[in-house]
Amino acid sequence: MTIWQFSDQLDSAWLRDRLYRLCNGLLEQATYAKALPNTILSCRPQVDFELLQDFEECLVVNKALVKNLNAVKDFISDVSVLGASLCFCNQGRIAAVDSRITLWGLQNNIILDASAEIDQRYKYAPNITVDIQPKIISNFKSILHVSNFNTIQSSIENTLDFSRKICKAIRERKTEVDKTLIVVHKSREEDIVACLEHEGFTDIGIGDNFQDQDIAVAHFGNLIGKNHWKDFN
Image (cartoon, rainbow, N blue to C red; front, side, top):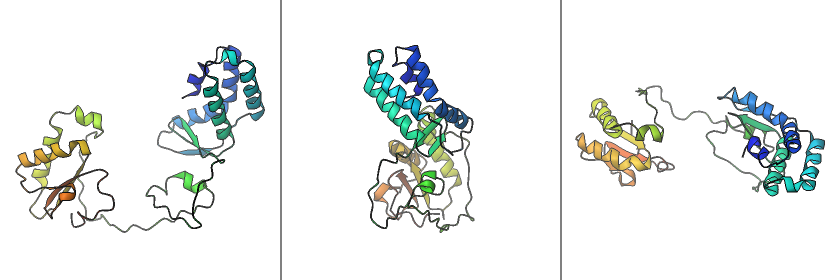
């Protein structure tokens, strides 16, 4: 819930004004980060903790003017955490790791995370060392065919014959020596298989039922930790 929505919980212009003053540093950081949509910024928003304490006391005294006291208290607690922590801003949102939370772990933990190099939480987390591994797969001989199309689910649903057009393009480009893997959303798997069959593909490996066919269909989430398709080019 945003600061503006929480202001609607207060039936007092005086309380709303103090809430805005209290959150001014957070709003400034969020506004600044919103102008840089492709950047994650680390920052320490300025929060006046004397004003924070005063505001909490005012809430209790004027609780009759607060529609949902517990929700506003929880929000103020979050403001306290943000003001005392290293924060990360992206697209107008601010997040932080609550220093009061202690993560359980062994003496020597190994976390496998492909995004660790760009996730600043690892960079600033205590007792964590990011060990960047060298590339083990080279794609320098690959040829990429890029289609100018938005593949989010809503765009696909609003596009007529999407699956048929994709399968037709595969038929046009596939050669006899190609082993082709098609990865789709789970909800479109059957549709893609039907369209491939319409294009003349009769032997299709589907999901875990893959039997070394030269064309296979799998869905996102069913590829991790499997080597069924390791020989595909």
